[in-house]
Length: 220
Image (cartoon, rainbow, N blue to C red):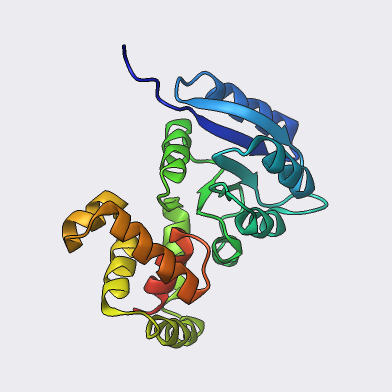
């Protein structure tokens, strides 16, 4: 008897009904994804996440009421926090950084082709960071500005708190490596990687792999 693969539970949060319809129609027909609910703002997103515990919350950034930035921070701080990729038309440098620092696991421009949005959701569910090309270019610009130099000093001071092995794990996370890949590279068990990663996140005061990767890149 073949093993049953768990489906990725996805919540779609956007104040535009047409956007919600397009996303739920696109994602709802996939065999490995299940739409568990829809919401129109950040406050509804919090209630939806509490009731249905989605694996991924696809979150619009600019909404009336509780916007995506505040919602991302709230969702990331909750128990069994879902992965929160932000989906928005406004992929400016400031919004990229604000979303990531608020707790989003990634940033997807709304003009991203549908197959790439699906791939991003699967990556987010697997715990991997998600950044559209425009967002990545924005981050590169940020670390080459005077403000980026200040961020570098702050990031280096934080990373000084880590042990050598924790630094190695953090560096692998920043390269986009999975836990299995980190385990192979550093000659650790997968459980050992998870333990080092958990301690690293706690020491640095960051909530997820994306924020850890951002901090490591800031320090370079």
